[in-house]
Image 1 (spheres, rainbow, N blue to C red):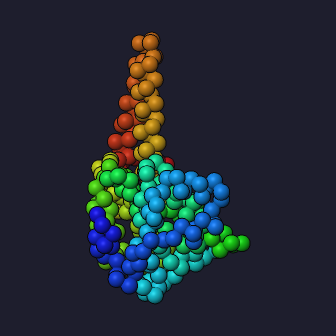
Image 2 (image 1 turned 180 degrees about the vertical axis):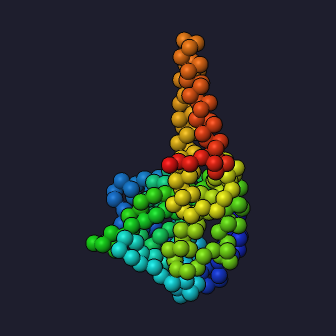
Image 3 (image 1 turned 30 degrees about the horizontal axis):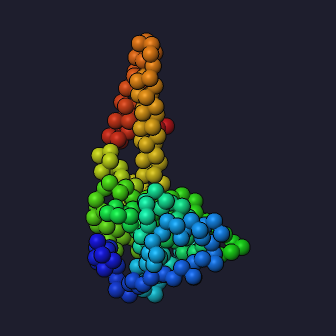
Length: 245
């Protein structure tokens, strides 16, 4: 999708639209030597585009600030990269260098990935420190995410609520499309639920791998039974019937 199509799908007001290349010389002085070199190697030339700026002036959404975080503006970027595997590091480099929460659409070949994060403000610098990253699944249709992020549907009580709803929808869609779990959960509960299911997936895969490699029949059966127990637990969790307490 082209940039204007993205903004249209997001239903962002025209006042928020920027659509300009973000000059590297404005970013570079804030990078370490290693980060600057890495950034230049993996990001396409002139590949950083500022799509939109969400603030009180452009949307009438109030700012938010407390002891640990601040939301004065939210910047939507699009970045063309050579491989999506580097996106979280790129996001961190940018997020650590800027005073605003970012929501970035990464493009590599024909795949896309959006990334946002929970941040904490650094008192001495006025910048933000990334705490937890949320990213979309490149295997899920981007249109599903865009519909869920539509400006008309988003909470506008203040910028923190607006931004965290974007992250919440990333979690909701992953649960729905990957696991068939479709329920409206808050960001914290949804994240905990998704991470618990993903942890079970890894544990199940570990037992299955052990069973495949185990030469002794008795031990192989034991590993497979453990995997089956966890599969049942996983199904109950997906159905919302498992009490983690």
